[in-house]
Length: 165
Image (cartoon, rainbow, N blue to C red; front, side, top):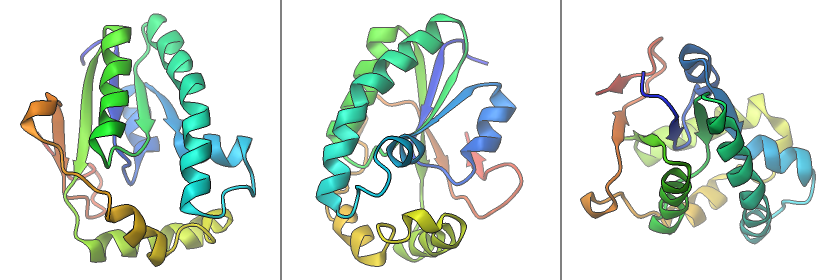
């Protein structure tokens, strides 16, 4: 295992991945739900509150990595700007990273959102097909120029995450 490693991208079973890697899991959804419960009702609300937690997350990640523990981050990396934040965090911490790329169709993503709405009803008002399409309109696939260490996944519910190295 690579020491001081960050893993990112939203991923179906990050709890298991973090446990397998003996890493600390940080989930944007959990932070937002804990700190801004009931206040995220639109995509604009999400953008506002997501930006507010980033400095805290950055400091927390640096502190965790300084102990020698790995960190698994369940944070979106749908745009170059989001990925740039992540890469800068890694550079400042002096750590390696891996980003998990989910190679899924819109249909597969919408299926996962429907399942998540059942499992996490507190997010049901925001986890909608309309929000999915709004967010996907901003999606920018990673490019070689970004210098990301990408692990591709075609997650289909198998026991080992479907990760292809």
